Length: 136
Image (cartoon, rainbow, N blue to C red):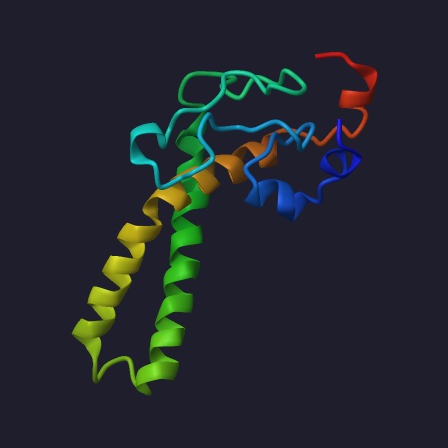
C-alpha cells in the first residue's frame, strides 16, 4: 500500500471520492461523475477496509441536506463572477438566469456525487490504523 494514500488529507480524500474510514478505497465504481449511465453506481463495500457504503435503505436521502446548500453557494459564486464581468446583475437579469441554469445543469452530476461523499463523511470516523491492522 502506498504510504501517501493512507495519509490523505480530508479535503483531498473528499475530492477524490475516497472512503471516509481509510481514505484510500473508491466509493464509486466509475470515478467520472459525468458518465451518466453509472452516476449512482457505488461499491457496496470499500475495496480497501470493507466499510459498508450502503448502511441502510434511503441513507443517502440525507445527501439532499448537503446538496442544496452546496448548489446555493456555487450559484452565488457564479453570480458574483457574472457581476464582476458585466458590472450589474439586474441589467442583465435574463442572461444571469440562463447562465445559472446552464451552470446548475452542468454541475448536477458532480453535486449528486459530492453530496453523497460529504454526507457519509459526517457519519463515519477516519481510522488511520485500519489498513495497518489488516482487519476488514
